[in-house]
Length: 421
Image (cartoon, rainbow, N blue to C red; front, side):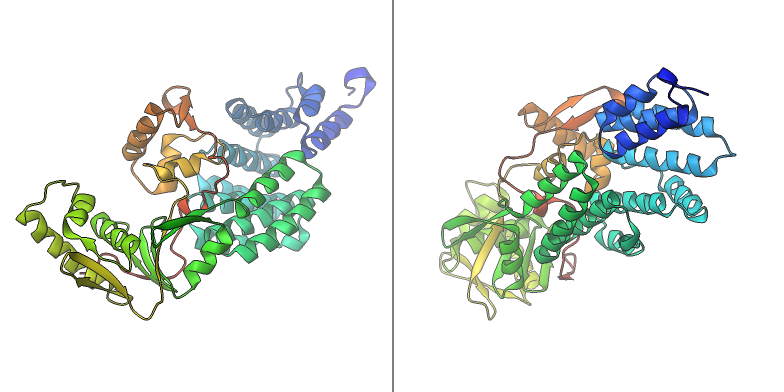
């Protein structure tokens, strides 16, 4: 069977596939846009995904899977992997993982190890987005990176770097990104190289602010790592915890205690007047005896929580924090402090998110996330398009700042239970 201008059909498909591999979706569409056979539908779907029309891309890939039928299990499995990648690109984090696992098993059984590794990489990227770093590392270790083609090798190194940056392991991240650059250049795909450049920029952008002795200055990610591994007592306003080295007191679910700890750390080595603490922690400008009694109770709770790393002392005017065996007390603050910063951090990747996927990534209810989005939209910080289930939210990244410390992840240290009495 012949194609356009006497070119064999298989040659057209091969040319379209090469165009897609090189990041040229328009070139691929020029070759297969008028064809409706299974292979052409799959290639058209991938091309539409590269252009950014995810809904059309998903429809085409599903049509291709049906057209291949049960007699072509490998081709159908590849369509499932393509659909999973489209779901990830469109930030549909609720896409069924079992379907991807089944497709990967089929590919491994039939010897298509490259696409099987790609399926595993998609699972890893989803786990990273939702902050499940331990599981992501376990899955990543199951991939034989030495056998990957250049494009997949670059993606593999990007995953290693992404996990390392969230764990504040900057040397590991830099080494992985260097390898990603080499693999990306061999692949020669502009979009992939741009993604690598964005990841490298994170390491050279301010990730937090250091507040100490009434002064503040920006910190790069490697400086944050060094600070958290030092003997300095750090009140971490990015993760809502108090740290000294590897010892972490998590206060994310005890906001009053964290607010008091931060106020004391910002004033250290001086104390903080009682009325100032009441106004900041309880939002009461005019304190009475009931507020002072409540302050004493909360200070007692904070004293108990911080006992392994610091003491809380009453002074004539108020309260002061006294670190145990450390030289300094500092506050690690977000580069830009504003409400709903975690939502903005996820949206800062430049992709379009649904409220349901944001709730999955943040571990919060969808209603809570929707209220945050509505508040951010009211101030013009985010925008949406579409309606109903197709509604998506996006925002441009904050220029010159990294959002690494705001993204979902576990505390990279030995944590003390924040709910302990």
